[in-house]
Image (cartoon, rainbow, N blue to C red; front, side, top):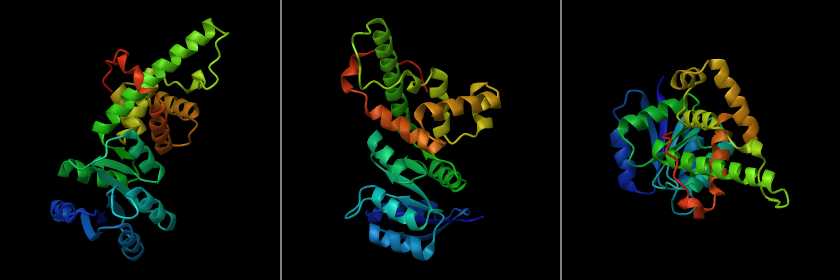
Length: 245
């Protein structure tokens, strides 16, 4: 089955480069390209692509808001953000807009084609180079929250009124499962990667969803990113985690 692809980027060289890069792929049909939000919304209505490669920073309405507008009318379209922005706030907003993928523009042709195919199948994919930082941030935050909880238990007179409940702190195993979710792995693939039974993986997923207060994998990723944003940067003098997610 051929995937109908559209490209939205305000830089002509980027658009032309993507057309050249993907134009000879038998699995993909490039149905159109454009440079701004208005054109993108019109293209989505008239051509109904399966997948849109969307830049974030554009003149006028940005790519994130454009994605929201498109998905209101065409919820079956999958949107992959292709951008230079590596900050977790951009990723969080992109996922909240309904995006299914987030890649940096230095991505290779093979990785881009693989992501297009997997997003088309219903997976959510985040560039590993940016998600690694998110995992590290969340790991440090989780350790700090656990330390605060311990202090609270031993010094009850000191109340941390804004402290999240201990139940929101993911265990190292749950953090590992969350990491594999972002790679688009199925429960069976996560089972293989972690040497856990599939039923055990499902149990971990239920616990992750419960702790983060979410209903599905995409929401879990978005929630973890949002929590990592709340970590004060003066904790940088803490020992950096040696776990390689």
